[in-house]
Every structure is written in C-alpha cells, then in structure tokens.
Amino acid sequence: MMGLPESIHFIERGWVNSNQIIVAGGDGPVLVDTGYEADTAVTLDAIAQTGIKPANITRIINTHCHWDHIGGNRAVQEASGAKILAGPKTAEIINTGDRNAMWLDYFGAKVDPPPVDEVLRPGHDIVLGDLKFQILAVPGHAPDGIALFNQKHGLLIGGDVIFQDGDMGILNTAVHGFGIIDQAMDTVKMLQKMNISTILPGHGPIIYDAHSALIQLWRRLTAFLRDPAKMAWHLVRRIIMNYLIIGSGQPRDDLVATMTSYPWAKDYVFRCGYIEPEELVNAVIDDFLARGLIESKNGRLVSHVPR
Image 1 (tube, rainbow, N blue to C red):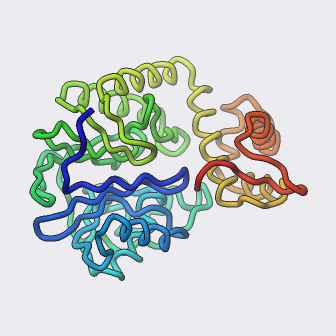
Image 2: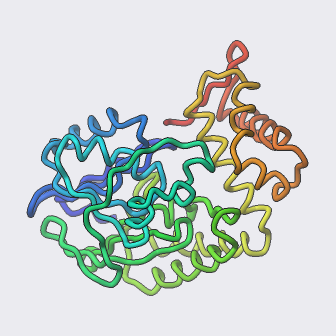
C-alpha cells in the first residue's frame, strides 16, 4: 500500500459532509470540496488540524455542484480570500443559481454559494502544489462532475464517482433522466483504461485498490441497469439517512412529515413499490432501526451514523 504524496492532506468526514482534500505547496494550499453549509465551523477546524491555516487557502476546487460539496465555499472564502474553481457545468449552475441542479429544493437542502471565479476545462492540466493533475469530465452521479488525475502517483481525486467497495453517489434519475446510468458506465470504462492505483473519494476512506473498486462499481451499475428499483432504493436509503442524521433527535412523526414534504419522496415512492410516501419513509426507518443504524429514545429518532 503506497502512501500519499507528502503535500496531500486527506480529511475523511462523516455521512453528511464531503471529504476535504488539501494539496499544499506551490502558490499556496488548495482545498478540494468544502462540505455541508451547517458544518462549516467543523470544516474550518478540520482544515486547521492538518497544520494548514484556513486563512492561507488560495484556491477552492469543487468537484461538482451538490450542496454537501459546495456548502462551505462562502465560509472558507471569507476566511481566506480564496478563488473558487469548478468545471464549466458546475460554474454555470452555481453562477446562475440553478437550485434544481444543486438539488436544493428537491431534497430540502440549504446552501448559499458565492460565484465561481475560474473555470476548469476537462482535457486540460492544472498544477496544485508541485503536482500536475489532468482535469477529467466524470458525469454520472453529477452530470457536471469533474475529477483530477495525477499520472505520476496514479492518484485520482474522484468526487462522488466511486466510494469504498464499489459504492457511489446516488443516481437521481427523476431529475436527470435514465441517461445518467449510461454516463456513469462510460465514466467507469474511461477510468478503467487509466493507470489509477489510489482514489481519494468524496465520501468514505481512501481507496488503495482502484482496479478492484472499479470492477465492483461496474457490477453495481449493471445491476442498477437490470433492476431500476434497486437503484431507486439506493437513493432513498441515502437520502433518508441524511435526514435522520441532520434531524437527529426529532420525533418520528415530525421527521416523516418533513421528509415527505419534498419532491423526491413523491418521485420515488412508486419506483420503490409503495403507494404513499409516508409508507416508504416509515419502511426505511423501520429497516434502519432493525439494523441498529438508528434508535428510538423517548419517542425521538437518534442516528448512530457519524455526521
């Protein structure tokens, strides 16, 4: 197992927040993704614990436009004056305030990102510290997604393209259409042809066996293609767990009412084989209780999954 280059700091977060990756050196530290807006104080502290002062961050790179990756942009920029960089589609989404593409109203998320200052073009290179990265377009989970690949170390900063054990970010076909499955599979095929050994994912631990993880992801996507209901359940469980973590300590009825008030619940209830959104949400809560992922204390649901 090879270690990371000394200039790279990997900050693994919990379920709600994206990981943060810092590349130090050169013209100053560069931060990749900034987490959830409500947790910016924790994000700034996590950065400081690496030995990098948040005030010294010179650039922020967003791998895609979702709220758990861009939520800390404003706080980090205010602390440092850093410029914000993103792929062309992400820049357009953020700079035009496209709330649907950011999944804000759809999932009931809150974020107020500042404008993107500079566009990163797929196919071009960018130097972070003393490392050169190729900018890749990696649509699928996020149609606007980009990743950064360092050939010398076989290192991919992957966003939500792939997680440990071949998992990945949810595929929201209700918003983006079923074509995103084909996009995700094309992205995997592209990555399999590259000399990638280590992946720094947007969530979860570092992936040191990229080859095996990509094979696992391909199998998962193939299963989703054969059985769209399985893909729908993958999304619904993730979203409900997010609500359970963020709203931990709420009475069950209040949490169900909140979750079913957003468009996603109505879009996915039939895809998961239920008639009413309340039935779907309660079924998932019961499953989480049975598996010990959450518990009921004095009529309130408390999550055991790290935030």
